[in-house]
Amino acid sequence: MLNFETYTPESKPTNEEKEAVANFLFKSLEQYGDPKADILKCMDYALKETVSFGGFICVAFLEDKIVGAVIINQTGMKDYIPENILVYIATDAEKRGQGIGRQLMEKAIATAKGNIALHVEPDNPAKKLYEKLGFTNKYLEMRLVK
Image (tube, one colour):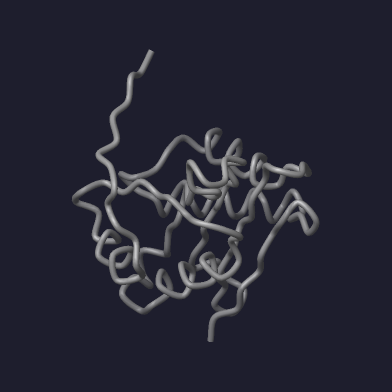
């Protein structure tokens, strides 16, 4: 049975817990991931103690082992941009296909206040899960990288 721990600006992880989650995400995101330093920046943002910014980190444990994690950052832009953006979600490679990702997403959706946006690569198998949970593709994202 999965256990969940949700970290917020009011209930922050210890440095050891934060490091464990960052290491898990760095390893488990595989080709869809970012450098560990960027994951840590995202975690710091999610744990900011401000009125309109911050977010949360939800971690799934099987016994004492991390088997999934999700980070949601608040955008502070209610109404014209979704209030939340799902930045990272990953499950343990050995546990994929067992419903952990779905349970993490359901927990994140229930915890988030307001709408949620996310970015997903077209070939990412998780895209099907997002669609089953009600996410739609409203826009084609374009970026200018300077």
